[in-house]
Structures are given as C-alpha cells and as structure tokens.
Image (cartoon, rainbow, N blue to C red; front, side, top):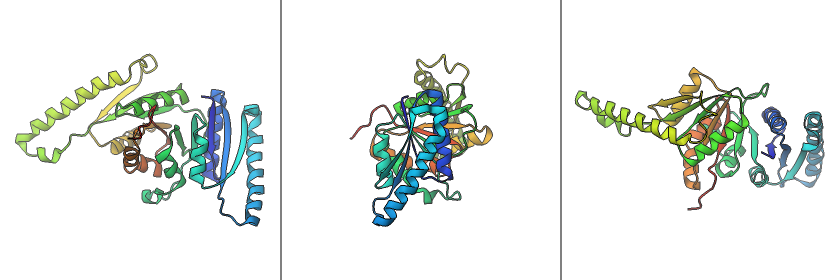
Length: 284
C-alpha cells in the first residue's frame, strides 16, 4: 500500500479519521494525503476567506504529522462538490479513509450524506472510522458471502491489521422458512439448515485458499440469520476493532447492498468499518 487518502471535514469525526489514517500510514510506510473540499458555489469574498482558513488548518495538520511521517504527508485543498471531488482523488489512492457521521441512531438520515454517496460509487477500499485511534487494530471480524469482493475485503483487512485476532462470519438464511411450520415440516427445516451449514463449511475452505497459514487460529462462525442481523449479533457478544465487508461488483447490486446491510452499518457503525469492492467492476 503506497498511498492513503483521508477526506476530512475538519470536524471531530474528521480528526478521528486522520488519526487512524496517520497510524496506518506510519505502520505501512505509505504516503498520506489530507483532503478537504470546499464547495465551489461560495461567494467570492467567502471563498477567499474559507480557502485561507481551511488551507492554514490543513497545513497545521500536516506539519503536526511530519515528525512521524516525514515528507510522506501533505495537505490538499480543493473546490467542488465534496463527494465528487473525494471520488476523483480516491481513484489515485490505495485506501480512502473517512469519519463516520452518526445521526442519533436514525439510519434514514444517512441517505444522501457524503460518506454514503462516496461508498456507492467508490472503486477504492473505504475505511469508515468511528473510534479514536489509540492503538493498532487488535481484533478483526470479516463478514463473507464467499464472493470475490469478500475475498478482497479479507485480504485488505489482513494487510491493515496484520496482528489482529481474526474471526470469519458467514450468515446463511433458509428462504421461505415461514412455509416450513408445523411438526410435519419441522424436520425439513432442520435438514435444510444442516445442508446449508455443511455447504457453508465447504465453501469457507475454498474461500480461504492460500491464506490458511495466516488464518490457522481464526474462529469461523456460521449463523442461520440475515447478514446484517448476524453481524450485529456477533459484535454484540464479542466486539471487534475492525469490521470488513465486500461490496458487490455491479452498480445496481452495489446500491441494493448499501440500501440494506452496508447502509445500516455505515449509518451507525458498530466499530471501524472497511468496505472493499471486488478486484474489478462490471458495467453490465
């Protein structure tokens, strides 16, 4: 990993994102770019004043990190639509870091925010930071559906948290289970659950191909539940520092994912969240 981009709005959430991005850049030997975007529709007098104040703030942030990162850190101020400018800059980075913007637990208010807009279209791994970076990531939960995106998320997470205790979670849900009620059909439900669990175990082995030495001690969790509920249930019983998920490859599917599991997670993340696209994106 050569370049980390942190997009900050210069708020407390932005400071958390910058702290984590700096820690990762130091550990990985990466360059760190601190980006702040000002809207380009400001009146001329306000634009000049905002540019002066924000530019000075960025310079101060970068200067404060030079003792740790040397000349690998710099500030970058741009004018434009924030989410579009962030996406353009992220295309040149290996990792994009942003702060989580929580709205009193009301997930619907997350729709349309800069983080959500960026997440829907970002082709770069996106780390959404919720907590202060007081130490390297020590515990990692990777949610997988055995897709290419999930594999990319696993590999990226292991790179960011090489020493973390790792858990692998797969949720499998029996479809139309409400049709399998009654004593006579209960055995069918049990049989289907058993079949899915056995298939998930085999798929997990295939999914981890080549990473077995690194994940020899990793806990494997197979739950009969919906993905979002399984993730939150797992984290409620054993919290993690970092949660990694993959995003789908096609734009429409990516929006559908963000409309359910990822949107709920990003709107009110239970911990720092790493969202990783697959190695390629289909335009179909």
